[in-house]
Image 1 (spheres, one colour):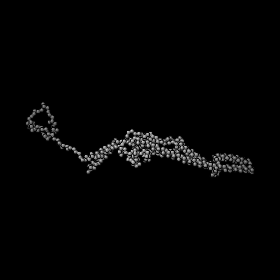
Image 2 (spheres, one colour):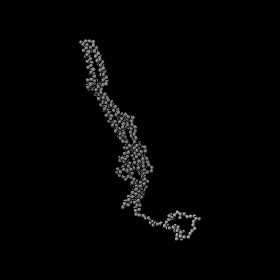
Image 3 (cartoon, helix red, strand yellow):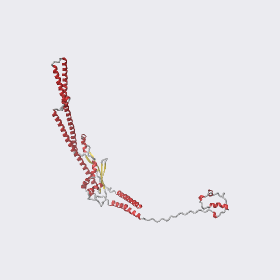
Image 4 (cartoon, helix red, strand yellow):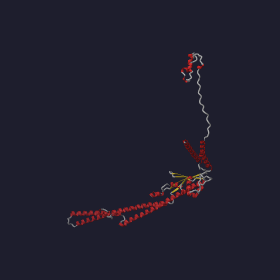
Length: 430
């Protein structure tokens, strides 16, 4: 009994868990091989281990609203919700409808006169230093145009507050500077520098007023282009007249110099005179050759006391002296420094002739420019071409209520978020 109970006592050792049992004891043999049950002592039987109880958490307390939460919600209402509601009320209850009229135009130039190809630099006088569309763009945004249209259409009365809309209307009467600032809000000008097209959008509280203002802008712009055209034509005419007078005076002076030269030297054509003088020298050269041959023949056939020898020698000497004089007149030989030589006279005559020729050509060009300018005075070189006539709106597209309300909401929410983050960041640092 004692030996049989020993294994059971070892199995019931409470200090070891089931995982530390020997593998041989954990495997149960089949019933046929199992030994007969032996009476055991109840005190030596296995007792299963009791599980340990889990700790129980305390019950959660009910949540409550802290004062900081109330302040945060109050600030959200004041900074975000209230401005959005007030903006929505004003936009849909008090803001007046605005109608947009659109007009589009550009500045066109006519092709130059066919005779302009002969004018050289005169042809470029009709163009301005800067583009006409650039000038027109500045003119539409200028105080002069605003003042002119205010006198014509009473812009202050057109844009004054209808039905109590003090935010989007003009506070009449106001100064011309304040009217110009409001003009730039209600009149938008889009200018394409590549195509030179200008598009104007005018806002007003009535469709007819918007169209009237757009039509007045188009009319005033056309009048301004006409003034530029007239000023350019007047400048061109004044310049061409002055150039024609200078060319005429130059031609008269050149012709007077030629006449004075002919009277002074008693010759009409120095070239013909030079050709005649060259013929005289050629004739004298032939006579000199003949006289020299006769002298050589006498020397070879007669005695030294022959009276014909001195006569032949004197003839040769006279002809040679005459040739030297004629050459001196033409600027050759020892007489080349003579100011009255034919070479100097011919050079001076050619210079005067070229001067007269240049003066005649300049006079012809100036005369042609003057004729073209006179012909162009009756036609308009540049004009305003409208590709979009001022439209008459049927529906109000402004103010953009949803867009404005969304911007107000986004700005208010961003302002409230940043303020809350800054406040709590400073609060946590303390």
